[in-house]
Image (cartoon, rainbow, N blue to C red):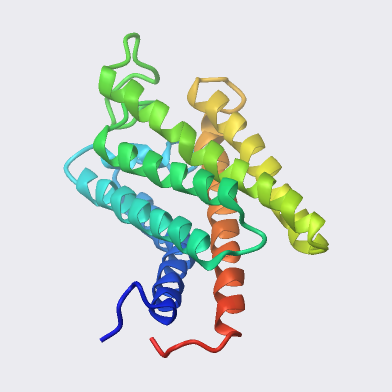
Amino acid sequence: MDSPSVPGASKVWARRLLRCGVAAGPMFVTVFLAEGAVRGGYRPLRHPVSSLALGSRGWIQTANFAMCAASVLGGAVGLASAGEPEAGRATSTLIGAAGAGLIASALFTTDPVSGYPPGTPDALTQPTRTGIAHNLSALPVFLGLSGAALVTARRSWRAGQHSFAGYSAGTGVGALTTLVLAGAGFGQAPRLVNLAGLFQRISIITAFTWLSALSFRALRRMSSIAAPMD
C-alpha cells in the first residue's frame, strides 16, 4: 500500500490535489449559475452570488462555498507539492488565502443588498456584524486569486512562457477591474447597480478559469514524468 512518505506516492497525491484545483472553478460556477437561474426574485445581472446563501434554499450556496474552498485549498497544496515553476510559494500562498476566504464566506452569511431577498431595502442602513464579516472574507478570495495571477505572470515571463504570462496578467487586471465595478454597483451607483451581478460573475469566472488553467498545466507537466498509476 502506498505511503505519503514515498516520493512516488507523494506525486500521486499531488496530481489528485491538482485535479481539485482544475475542478474548483467549473463546479463553483455551475452551481451558482444554475441556482441563480431558478431562484424566485433573484436577478443574476443585479444581485451578488453571495445572496444565494439567503433564504430557505441558502444552504445550497453555503455548501457550494465550502466545497469550492476545499477544492481551492487542495489545488494550492497540489501546486506547492508539484514544485510548479510558474507557481512559486507566493502563488500557492495567495491561492490558499482565497480558499480560506471561501471558508469564511460559507460561515458568515451576507446581508441583503439591491432588493434581494424581495422586500428588503437596496442597502441596509446598519450592516450586521455577520454581513461585515462576509464582505471582509471576500477580499482574500478576489485579491488572492488576482494577486496569484499577477505573481505568476511575472514568473512565467521570466521563464520564457510569454503567452501564459500575458494571460495571467490579463486575468489579474481584468478580475480586479470587474471587481471594482461590481463593488460600485452593489454600493448602489446608479449606472452600475443593475449590472453589478454581471461584473461580479465576470470577475469570478475570469479568476477561477485561470486557476483551472494553472492547475491543468502543472498536472500535465507532472503527467509527462513517469509516476505510479493512480
